[in-house]
Amino acid sequence: MARLSLGCCNLSQFYLGVDDNEALRYQTLCLQYALQTGDEARIIHAYVTASLVASARKDPRQR
Image 1 (cartoon, rainbow, N blue to C red):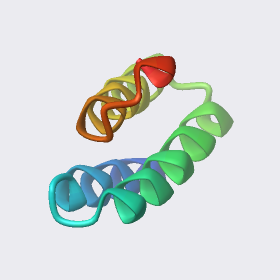
Image 2: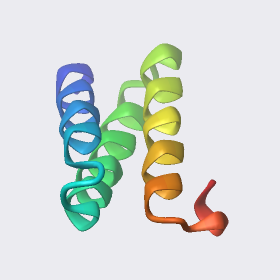
Image 3: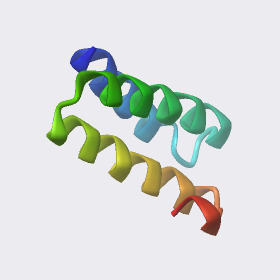
């Protein structure tokens, strides 16, 4: 699960500015997998990615 989370976070950040809908899709998966791991560092990384995606989408509700 930790590797899936990391991979999805990386894909999400890769898609930023290219396809924000895909970035959001992978960010959602990233967070889902991170929460399943219970690994604090992985969860923090997922929330950082979520913040980056929200900023790129200019969505202040998700920051």
